Structure formats: structure tokens, C-alpha cells
Image (cartoon, rainbow, N blue to C red):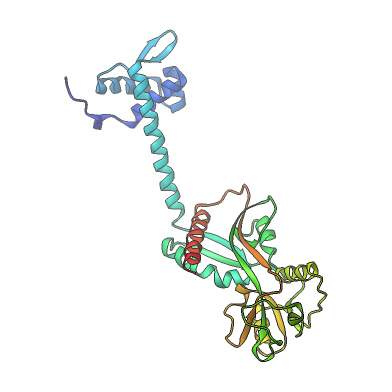
Length: 308
């Protein structure tokens, strides 16, 4: 018995066999493959000759697979599916050779989270550019994504069903006090009393800032009516004013970093956190670079938090 030379089997022959199994006739298979019926007949005849077995029974009911023909057709279908997978992987790789990922967030994320992610991303995908925008406020990222002007956003969770979201980390709010004017008996790292927190003028962000909203709601929940002495846009300016002894502030810890050594950090009388998450527009058709950036973000931040 002569040994079968599988190197002589062609993909066109396997495609013809699978098409006949799917359509039931040579003519319909030819139409599906956009070939002549004689070309399909020749492909099956040469395949049967190479394998040395009968794959199809021809009759009035059309072409019917023989038992061995059915087994070979099943394997041929798997091979053609794998071929599609190969093509898809190659296409995805081509899509990662160039492109743009548009990211929008707020200052503390852009300063403390994104640089390490972008560094790692550029090492893996040097041909893909990353643009970083900043919303008018912390919720601005959501509106920018809705308008299709960014691919990935950073915002406070929760968000509505228009977005796919996952939690990145939780950031505690703290009180910063000037070292030279720490209220009596206040200890760094320990909770303040409400009297100690309000003993100095309060420095807060502008009213349209997301952190300001969180702080206002926090004070309201605890029955504290406090009018800020100063309203400031930039986090760095707030910290600098505290250093100068102009007052105290309630601020998310990440937004205050790096915290100067001559500023005292205390816990609030009651805990307050902001939940920072990553969002994409739900049901949007994302590009391979966007998926690659999200994977890099998850891997980089998990590594960073484990180190911390």
C-alpha cells in the first residue's frame, strides 16, 4: 500500500470538500466558492486520488459524504478555521504597528498613573501614538467619550450604563495642615476632630471641581457648615498655600503628591474616599491599539500596586 503524501494536498481541495458538505451539491459549492463546477469536480477527484479513499457518493440526492469522508471533512473544517485564526492574528499585529490611542482624564491621574503606563506601552508598541487630554472637570471625561473624542477615560465611579468600567484604585482624602500652625494636640497620621479641622481657614478647589463636590457632600453629611476662605484651581497651588500657613485643606492624597515635608498630613474625622476607574464607551468598536493600551494599563498598575 503506497504511503499518502500529505504535502500534495491543497487547501483549495479541502475548501471544495467542506463547501460540498455544506451545500449538498457540486454546483452550489462551485457557486459558493466562485469557481466553475468542473474545477470543483477536479479538486475532489484529485483529493480522493491523493488520499486513496472515496469521500463522496454521487446520486440523485446530490453529493453525500461517505463515513470516512465525513471524518475527513470534520478535520478539514477545523484546519480552515485555524487558517482564519492565523489571518486574524496577523491582521491584529498589523493593526498594532501604527495608530493612535486617545486618553482623557484629570490632573492627578495624568501625573501619577499614566507616565509609567505610557513608558511600558511605548516599549511594546513604538509605532502607536498616545494623546492625553484633560476634561473641564472630573466628569468631563465621560462627556468627551460620549462625543467620540477619546477612546479611554479616567473618572470617578460609579458611572451609568453608557460605559464599560473597572475600578483602578481608591484614593483616601486627607487633611493637610501647615507645620507651624498645627491646632493643639493634632498628631500627624491620626484623625482630627471637627474642631481641629475647622480651626484654620479652609482652602478648597473651585466649585465645579469633582473633588470639591465630594468634599462639600462629605461636610454636609456630617452636619458641618464651612465656608472656604480660598477657592483654588490647581492642586499644587493648594498645597503651596498650606505650606505658607494660609490655612488647611481637605484633598485626595494622590492629588497632593508629592507632599512637602513641612506639611502635616492627618486623617479626617470620618473616612472619605474617591473611587477612580477606567471607562470606555459601551458597545463601541475599539481598535487593537486601544485594547493593547488597556491591557498594558492593567498589567502596569497591578504591578505598581503590588510593589506599593
